[in-house]
Length: 346
Ligand code: DAH
Image 1: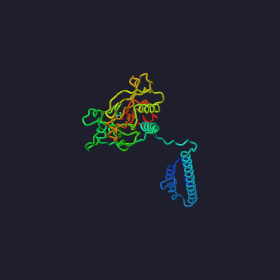
Image 2 (image 1 turned 180 degrees about the horizontal axis):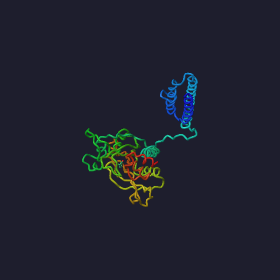
Image 3 (image 1 turned 120 degrees about the horizontal axis):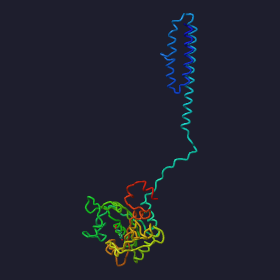
Image 4 (image 1 turned 180 degrees about the vertical axis):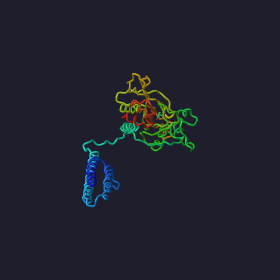
């Protein structure tokens, strides 16, 4: 009987040690503990039978069982410590920082193509002595039309359908030209040379060529002996710098109520050099702006005496200029804010 129990304890020891050696996690060692040393464990179970042994054998078997218990507890501690060390090693390996890796580059934004084009325009006209003059986007009907020689009922008003506010006579400007009146009224009778950049609004169907909101840059020079030749010189210089030297310019007679005479100005197509292509619609020319000599009525409305003063004015669309520079064929790309587009040009 006692021999049986001792053998049983030997077998239990071997089995327990073999099993413990395969435990890989703390949870497995805990399961092992309850299997062998817990209240319902194999060792506890085996010792239940101790009482049924003859009394003289009990101490021997009892000592053996106690030693076994101590050994297994010690083995458990060692196994758990080994697992803990292995876990630490795993974490160290997994969380290792490779200090030789290159850093992560922060993604750098860039300026919008319209902004870049505007800044280029400011630079070029700045060199020629033009100051930037800020005029309001919310305008009165009077400034947007009447003072620019477009009285109520004038057919030219049809060229510019706009957005009206709930205040009668207050609208969103359809062009930057009303800024001419603001600048003249501020500076008259001094000579002026200004550009007036900013947003304009038109109530029209949005198409590849037209947006509801777009930029314009207006130019205005008023002085004592300003002629059409000055306008040409300024525009030739501008086009040279904006589109590269040697471009050809074409002045076509046109009509604007606020200039007389009026022209529309074309540059030979930057893409096909005048040969004819899709962008220039096979004409070889690209229209870039409207211009003319300031109408005497407008000069007077601005506070200048047209007998002593003359001036020229022009108005251009920077998005259109950006489209030509970057070969973009749809203005809607500019303000849908698709970064894939914005990243491509520039
Ligand atoms: N305001 C005109 C438009 O929006 C553009 C323009 C044409 C401006 C001739 C001018 C000019 O100053 O002289 O269509």
